[in-house]
Length: 85
Image 1 (cartoon, one colour):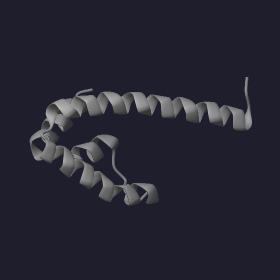
Image 2 (cartoon, rainbow, N blue to C red):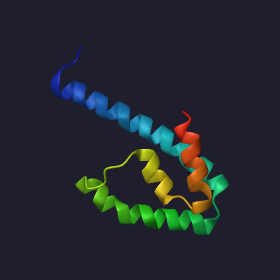
Image 3 (tube, one colour):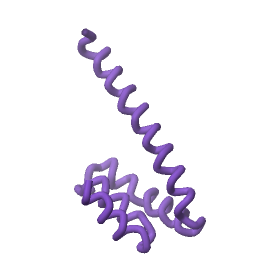
């Protein structure tokens, strides 16, 4: 079994691969749901949050973060849907 830096690289690669797969699914679904203005507003909100996320100043779940970026018409149903899982 690999140790040290080799194990860390394999874990990092595995996580990055999984994130890319999930991002693809998420963005494909989002393209079908959101109008252009909503998508643009979400992108701008996320860009504003990036520095805070990198600094570690935001303490909230991923679901809350995503819901906070969503247009209001989707946020409450999204929270309800994800709270039932």
